[in-house]
Amino acid sequence: MPIDYYLNIAVSGVLTGLVYGLAALGLSVIFGVVRVVNFAHGEMMVAGMYGAVLLAGFLGLDPILAAPIVAALLFGFGWLLQRGLVNRFVERPEHMQFILLLGIATIILNAMLMLFGPDSRNVQVPYGFDTVELGPLLLDAVRLRAGAGAIVVAAALFAFFRFSRTGKAIRACADNPLGARVVGLNIDGLYALTFGIGAGVVGIAGALMTLLVDARPQLAPEYTLLSFIIVIVGGLGSLPGALLGGVLIGLSEAMAGFLLTPSLKSLFSYVVLIVVLLLRPQGLLGKRS
Amino acid sequence: MTRRGIVLLALLGALLLVAPAFADRYVVSVLTTVLWFAYVGQAWNVMMGFSGLLSLGHALYVGLGAYVSAALFVHFGIGPWLGLWAAMLAATAAGCFIGFLGFRFGVRGVHFALLTIAFAEVARIGFDHLQWFGGSGGFFIPVAGNAGDDLLNLRGSPTLFYYVILALVVAALALSRVLLHSRLGYQWLAVREEPEAAEAVGVDLFRARIAAVAVSSALTALGGVFQAFYFNNLFPEQVFSMGRSIEIILPAIVGGIGTLIGPILGAFILTPLGELLTFLIEVTGLDLPGLKQLFYGVALVVIVVYRPDGVWPWLARRFGLVRQPGEEA
Image (cartoon, rainbow over the protein chains, first blue to last red):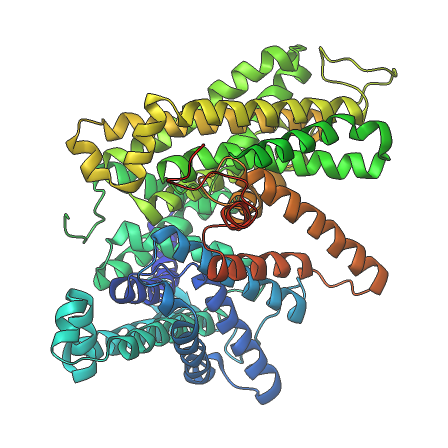
């Protein structure tokens, strides 16, 4: 088998992995600041997918153009969720937060099942079957666009946290909530903003994902688990780690799907998780606590 | 418990004991489901309720118990009373391995919960591909043709299974009570409430936690053995599914995490509600997939927001069923 073949699969895996990484980034942002694990993350991602599917169906929008609209909607949802429900659980024991979000996840998942049915829905784009030749590589146009979109959004997110005043305030909240309160930051508002941003980011990841995968409600728990795996593999609280973990999982999935049978590919992600937990429990880019 | 509490519990026990004599087949089957969830809820409670370890992958132990005992029976003709030891061993080994991975490397709280989900998922995908266990096509235990109850091979009428699960619930309740008042039980509570303080007074955190996982997974495996022989069919997609893991934790959460009666009460609330919902869906013709699960999601949110300690502690206080701290006996 020529080496080009493997290279092609590897690059495809990396591009898909970038979208996974973007989804995990949303989870990491919420956990890093609000200290609540968003167990409804995959459900929000699939909601983003359906957003893109509906926008394509009714307005003929390309998923990449639909992404900002989906992001705005999910931002609003995340903001309201944090304000209305999650915020009063911030000080509660971890398992109660978990149970709350599990309940929310179950509600979103089954609401989607009732609204859209169990069948998969896809988005038709004019460049759906185009390929781009890059040296020895032959890449799907959809995959290339999805990966590029994920990089752009991730870069914007990094820039926001690094340079903007609000981004710095959120980071201050994450480092030391009490200190942030002392200097006069509105913690509750910033928490809601962060949850909104995390939901918006995963919404964009969902919209981009429709370029690669058909939307089905059943994908939601898978994506939740996938985001968790990526965040742990990459290192808790590390944003670059989330992206790196996503790429790694995307790569391993693609390779496993190719070398073994496709139905075993998610098994491979769990194996990666277990190996990372054994050898480097703080994750690839995580700091030792 | 106060005298009133004990009398009520005894009354319930007596009622359950004679129920099959009066109730029809449908009621017995519903009660069997109730008791099954009460049983596995109690088993889960040992980890979460007593020692503060959140497991969201208990379907793994149910599944291992079910598959191991069923495979031994079908492939080698080894009956369930022998097979259950192998089933418990397999589940305990899996539980201890997960515990070892988690507790050694400080994977705590939510991330430990995640690890438990990951292993249940690995099992689900793995069993889909293991032909010896029937793969994704399912594994079946032949249904006995001859009538009559055969307790030795756990083949027979629904009433037989009803009494088996009732005995399991009573045994698990008794065991939980004994454990909770043992040295190990006090260690668990200390580890749950304040790990650092527990360690400071000499509790071996690792050992106490592993013990909790071992007890809980072994008990849960018995629930799996029962399930295998009661339903006679096993599918990885159902047995190991995450939805199943969530169903297992619901009774204890609704009834009251960490209480002895909580999981039983929770099962008595949830299963009949679910049955009622199924009935209403049938009557109204409102056949929407996911409606029942949606209801469970709402129940979770409502309970955790309004009764975070569960229904039982509130009920017990309200009606004086348990002795309040400081009250004379």
